[in-house]
Each structure stands twice: as structure tokens, then as C-alpha cells.
Image (tube, rainbow, N blue to C red; front, side):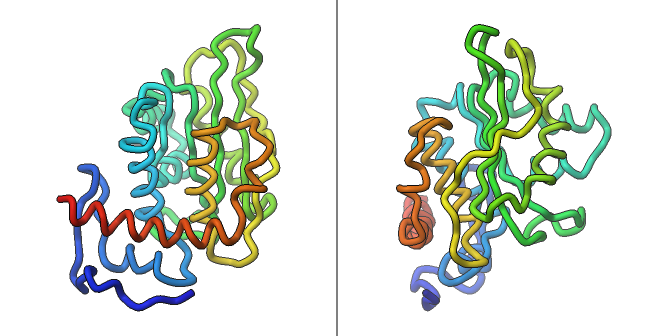
Length: 231
């Protein structure tokens, strides 16, 4: 699956997208072969979902930057956690997409760890609708479940009143990767699918196949090129 450097991508490429995420040529080249995606590439795609594809749901959806979920998992001070989450207006959102990484090295913010998975928080507005829940989707079985549980236990007190809150992860059937490098692309694909179809849709593992993920990797590269030429 390895590809040559795209003709439009210069060796010293550096550009900021959506006013907040800077990508270098090294970030973008991760899309061209059998490479593990870093925080920057996942956040770029999350910003695309939030600001373009699901723009009409910006008041309901939050696509959390990997740097935020990682930072929360690393710190203990409640005021610091609050400061990280409050700007995202998490108390108001109906669906919150939380990328989880197994990195435990606070010095390795971008590119640390070995596996990505996804937690989706679904808000219920009253007791009759049921409990607010955290759903766990992992293309590698349950490799990050412990890291995910630790992270949501820190976040949950800051998510506001939603009738009732179940802090125990609900493990969902997720599409499974067949290699050691596509986990980040699976997080991107699952987030997009759930944003469109909801957490209860049972076809996610039928739609998001290895070939689907291979194509999404190419589509993400095309998206970066498109956004580069737009500006």
C-alpha cells in the first residue's frame, strides 16, 4: 500500500487547517503507506467532521481532540480537567467522540502509544430516556479498555446533569482491523459512521471493512490536498 510522495506535498510543507490544526509533510505522509496515524491527523479529520460534514450538528456533537483526552488522562487536578473540557461545552453536547490512546508518556503527546480506540458519550436528557452512557469501540478487541475507563472516570463529573450517568463502559461490537497500523483510521471511520447512524446501529462492522478503511486513508489524503488548494 506504500505510495510515493504526492506531487503537491513539498518537503517543508506546513499549513494550518480550520484555524487550529497544523499539519507537516511528516504528518501527511502517514496517510501514504502502512503507517500508524498520529494525533495531528486524527484531529484534522475530526475538525473536518465537526466543521464541514456535520456542521449542522455543532451544537449537539463534540469531536474531541486527541490532545485533550490524552491530557485529561494524565492529570489529576479537577480544575485543570475542568479547564480542558469547559471550552468544548461538553455539558451541552448530545454525542461526544473521545479518541483514546494507550500512551502513558506525557512527553510524547503526538505520536506516542501503540493503539487508538474510541469512546462515544451519549447524553440522555431525562430519567425516562435512560442513563447517559459511555460506549467503547475498539478495532483491536479491547486493548485500550483500561485506559478508556480511567479517562472517562475523570471526565464524567464535568459532563453536567443528564438524568443519570453510568460511568461503566458499554463495550460495543466494533469492526476489527487485520493489521497493526490502521487503528487510527478505524477511529476516524467509526466516528463518522456513528455521527450519521447513532451508537445503536448494528451494521457498523459490516460497513467498515478493511477495504473500506484502506479507501478512507486515500480519501483523507485527498481531503488534505483539497483543503490545501482551497486556501
